Each structure stands twice: as C-alpha cells, then as structure tokens.
Image (cartoon, rainbow, N blue to C red):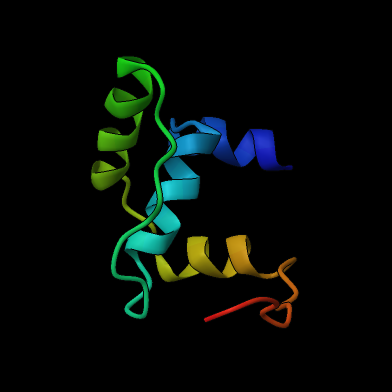
Amino acid sequence: MWLHWLKKKNVTRTQIALAWPLHQPQVAAPIIGATKITHLEEAIQAFDVELTKEDLKFLEEEYTPHKVVGAL
C-alpha cells in the first residue's frame, strides 16, 4: 500500500519523511542527517511535496504516540 501511494505521489520515502514535519505547525525544523550531497538534494525536494489533509491522515493513521524518554 505504501509503495503504491509513493508512486502515485511521485516521491521517495525520504521526501515524505521530511515533508510530513514541514506540514506540522509544532515542528520548527526537521533533523537531516546528510553525509552526501545527494542526501541534501533529495531533502531540498521535500519542500515541493504537497500533502493534502487526506495524505496527512493516511500517514498518521498507523502512528502511535510514544512517551518521551530522556532529558528535555
């Protein structure tokens, strides 16, 4: 199901992983662990990913919030 959705949106998993936090008002900046220029190039493309309310619902329906552990 995921792969079909990604193909339909014409995006990669990385782009979705970075696009989702960009659509969340409580997230100031996603953390990007880039070790190659291609990682940065793909991350930049996440800014162009449009996510509808239905897309966000699809992405969040399997998510279970977890208690934060560690220092804050």
